Amino acid sequence: MPEGIRIIKQDTETTFNERSQPVESIRVVFNVDDDGPFVKRFPKDGFSGVTAKIELETFAREIRALRS
View 1 (tube, rainbow, N blue to C red):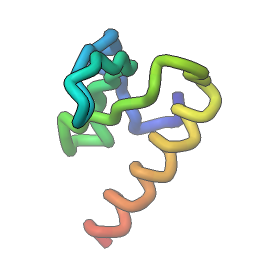
View 2: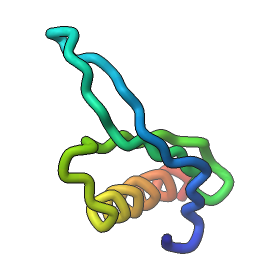
View 3: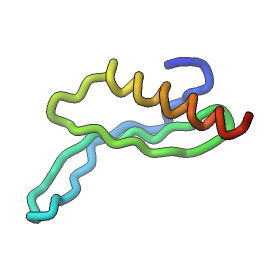
View 4: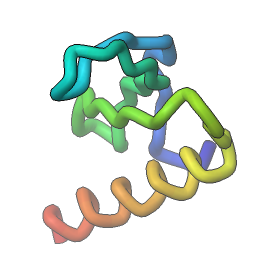
C-alpha cells in the first residue's frame, strides 16, 4: 500500500438492495495519514485488489488536496 494509507480492517459485508436481496461486498476500513477512519466498499463478485488499491490511492490524493 502506498505510504500514508493504512488498512485497519478488511472484511465481507452483507447488505440488501432495493428488492431486499442480499448483496455481498468487501469492506475496507483505512486511514490516510492522520485522517480517518474511512470506509470503501467494493462488490465481492469480481473483486480486484489492484482496482481497490487504485481507488484508495485516488481517495487519498483527494483527502490530501483538502489539507493543502
